[in-house]
Amino acid sequence: MDLAFTPEELAFREEVRGWIREHLDPALAAKVLGGLRLSKDDIQGWARTLGRQGWLAYRWPRAFGGPGWSVVQQHLFDEALAEAGAPPILPFGPVMVAPVIMAFGTPEQQRRFLPGIASGEVWWCQGYSEPGSGSDLASLRTRAERDGDHYIVNGQKTWTTLAQHADWIFCLVRTSTEGKPQTGISFLLIDMTSPGITVRPIRLLDGEYEVNEVWFDNVRVPVDNLIGEENKGWTYAKYLLSHERANIADVNRAKRELKRLKRLAQQCGVWDDLRLRDAIALLEVDIVALEMLVLRVLAAERSGKPALDIAALLKIRGSEIQQRLSELMMLVGGPLTLPYLEPALEGRWEGPYPGGDSALAPLAPRYFNLRKTTIYGGSNEVQRNIVAQTLLG
Ligand SMILES: Cc1cc2nc3c(=O)[nH]c(=O)nc-3n(C[C@H](O)[C@H](O)[C@H](O)COP(=O)(O)OP(=O)(O)OC[C@H]3O[C@@H](n4cnc5c(N)ncnc54)[C@H](O)[C@@H]3O)c2cc1C
Image (cartoon, rainbow, N blue to C red; front, side, top):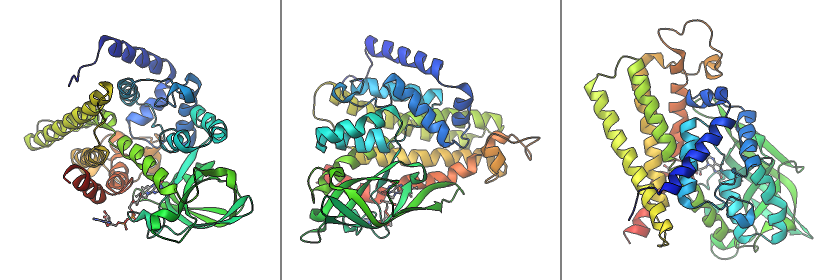
């Protein structure tokens, strides 16, 4: 196993770093690096910039309009984005639904949906979870009944991230109650402007509006928007989840946040506290180990060996690391990490910050927000079950 990058890969990294330096607004990067609130325009504006370069869909093969990069190039690009403080690429379009459309959609669906995802123009959200159907996803009850060349959809999705901005939602719906629950599920693409859809906000622990309930009341969806075959949606749903979980490891952002943690510790005058240094060192070891795990997956893919089936492990370790980073930042800031100061989150804090630096203000909201990482994308307890079944037998 060779974990070192080749000279060509290192040259590629310099090229993408240079491009990002030229195109990423420093004020936007400062917002990301300082953990401030990002607007819809911040996120979508950057997605469009990447889209114009053909890099928003950076994991896609050339045949579908992607750059056709190797997995190592994709990793290096992701690393360059993270270290520069680029806004996150929302996974729902390019990382989650697009691979499903490529693998199981018709050529017509591919022509219709993929260009808007690759350009960043069309915002997608994920309609899987329902009240009572999260870990036990196959029990979902949102119904889609056939009426001529349409489905009539009724039911409710929940925890739908950023649905308030979404143009489209990809949904798991029940089209049959015969047999096992998994066999009666279909995968539908639904226009969020369809009559009968209501989006209601759920406020998270950090006070932010990030997730929603989405209600469907006799929503008419053309049969043309069905992906693959009716009642085969569970297969497509699982295919999508494996992409979601690998993405959640987010090791490159963890490396960046570790640097921020060290900076904050120095700034707050606690860098010489040996117990804190010990905790930071242990965390750093785990981040390096996670990176090695990611590189092992890349090395296996590069050498044409079967990829290691460790998406669940990456999700567990990556999400725990994100939480530990935010816990240590809270410890470093102590009482100065006052929760939820609206102007400070917007970078509009004027005058002295009570007792310190307003850079500490976003730490508490971030700490509360990141409690989600061990729940979403399949909770870590359920991921541990998957690891036990697939790796230990
Ligand atoms: C911030 C946030 C954003 C989200 N965004 C989206 C989104 O955009 N789209 C979407 O479709 N979904 C989204 N989700 C939903 C997410 O996927 C579910 O919350 C998750 O799958 C857990 O389901 P649940 O909330 O119903 O909890 P439950 O399934 O009710 O689980 C409750 C507890 O029981 C544990 N548990 C359940 N089953 C087992 C088991 N078999 N063994 C051991 N422990 C078990 C769980 O780990 C958890 O601790 C989001 C969730 C959050 C918190």
